[in-house]
Image (cartoon, rainbow, N blue to C red; front, side, top):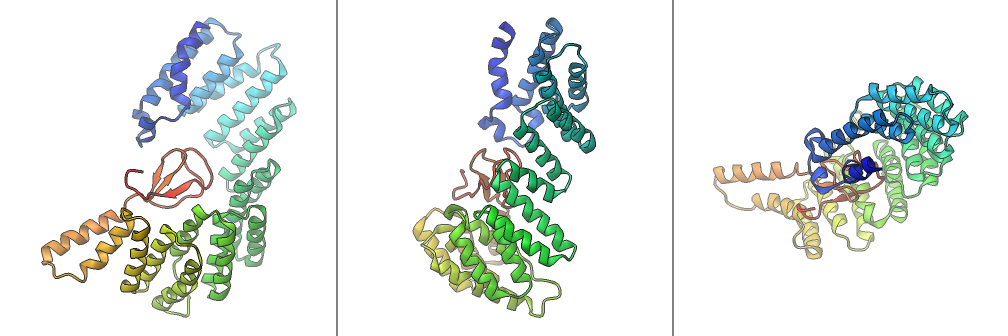
Length: 374
C-alpha cells in the first residue's frame, strides 16, 4: 500500500492532462514523460516484491504501452495469461490489454485474436466492441468501424466513419452507393459536420449549385450553432474540379452565390460574417468583403482574424513605399499560418479544422481561436 500511496501524485501526472504538458509539442521532454518513467520503475519494483499482484502487472503493461514499448507490454500480458490458477476475469482483462497492445503496434490479426479470446472469457462487451471499432478504423475498414460504433450507440463516430466509407466509394466510382451512405450518416447523426460538408461538396463538384444551396440550408438547421462555421470552412476548402466546364473565376462566383444568401438568413454571428468575407475575397470582391468584416468587428472589435483580413484589404488602398509594403505583405502572409483552430477540451491547436481531436480523441470539439491567447 505504501508503494501505491507513494505513486499517487505521479500517476495523476501521467494520466491527467496538465497545462504545461499540453502546451508542449515534444512529449518526450515533458514532465509527464519523466513521471511515466518513474512510475514504470516503481511498478516494476512492486511486481518483483509481490509477483501475485495482478493489478500491478496490468498497470505496468499499460505504462509500457504508454511509452511505446509494445514488446515489453506484450511480454507482461503473456506472462500473466499463462499463469496457473489465474481467475478468468483477470485472464480476460489481460487478453483485452494484449489486444490493445497489438493494435497500438499495428498487428491487426493478433489484436483480433486477443479480442476474440477476451470476449470468450467474458470481458466487458462494450469495451470489446469499441476496441474492434478502433481497430477497423485504423486498418481502413471504415464500414466495419461504423458498424461497431453503431452497436454501442456512438453516433458521432458512426456517422464519421460512414462518411469515410462514402469517400472511399467515390474514389471507386460508386457514386450512387456513396450518396446512400452519406444519407445514412446524416440520419444516424444529424449534427455530423463532415456528413453535411461532404454531401454539399459532391453537389458543388457536379455543378449542382441549387441542390448544394438547398442542402446547406438543411445543414444550418441540423448542425449545432457553435459549429456551423466548420461547414463553411469545409466548403471554402473545395477546389474546382479539373474537368469543370466553368472557369475558376466562375466557380468562385457560383460558390459565393451559393453560400452568401444562406449566411444572410442566419442570425448575426461573428464567424459566419468572417467566412462570408473569405468567400467574397476569393471572388475578388474586396469592398464587399470589407463590409462583411466590418460586421464581424461590430460583434467583436478585437477579433484578430477579421483585423488581419482588413489589413490586407487596406494595404491596396494606401500609398506605401515598396519596402514597407513588402514588409506588411510578408507579415500578413505569415500571420495567415497561425493555428486558427483549438480543441475546447484539451487545448490542442491546429492550422486545419478537425472533427476528431488527435490528442484527446473528443468529437467535434474544434473551435475557432477568437483570441490569440486561446
